[in-house]
Image 1 (cartoon, rainbow, N blue to C red):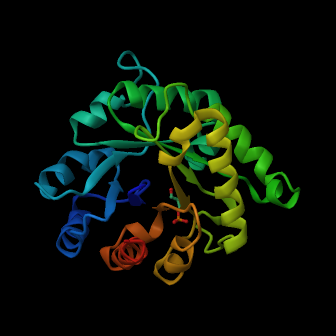
Image 2: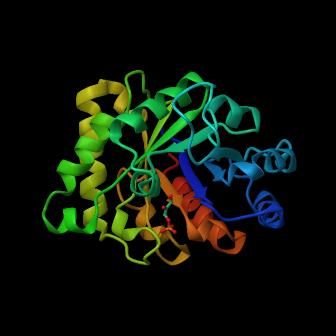
Image 3: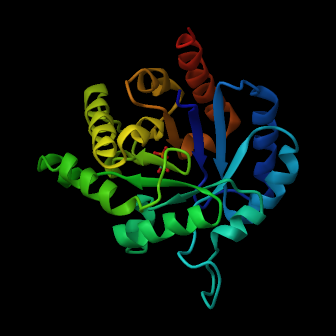
Amino acid sequence: MRRRLAAGNWKMNGTAEGLSEVEALLQAHLSPRVEILLCPPATLLAQMNWKKGQHPLQLGGQDCHAAASGAHTGDLSAAMLKDAGAAYVIVGHSERRTNHGETDEQVAAKARAAHEGGLVAIVCLGETLAEREAGQTLDVVGRQLDASVPEGATGLNTVIAYEPVWAIGTGLTPTRDQIAEVHDFLRSRLSARFGADAAHFRLLYGGSVKPSNATEIFGIPDVDGALVGGASLKAADFSPIINALEQVAEMELP
Ligand code: 13P
């Protein structure tokens, strides 16, 4: 019922040279079972959009401003990202929360701006290692979910990405049970707020996803895909992750 999503977040990596990686992905993947999304630096969106032509690869931004336009030097609006070819935008990534002090309220305002600009918002949340060790994981992600997902969110315009801060770029991943516990909790929390529509929200896991652990992670209930950082930069790494997701999707066929 939920279309699985393999999303790559290039972060602040990539120039026009990296477009050859996109070409390799386009050639390798045409399965309609899995949606593939790349979120490159905004400087590459228009070129990628041109390169992908009619291929169903989706593109996304990595952040947007909460306002539709105005005197905000250096910022980009949702409408600008859409104009450059984006259908999605990541908001509230832990690197933005940490490096730019973004609060849940600001993240919610950005997600709302994404919706108003016609983009699907990927709202990121996740606990730090100290919070996990203090037994606060569910409190933290619950609070982030409540406050970062704006009114008007639906399973069609919003994706949730659970990215434990301590797993990002570290090579560490939570256990199967730890991921399952958080995803199950997020689904229940969405149900309490959104009722039946909660079943339509896709829940991605992110943090050190790589070809060697993708199959196990994608087999966890309520994991609808991944938000992949480092391993999305090279088609040779991202492609086997997409394949793993396609295989899990195939196995679910009636
Ligand atoms: P890594 O896959 O490099 O750990 O990054 C995860 C991430 O932050 C994706 O948004």
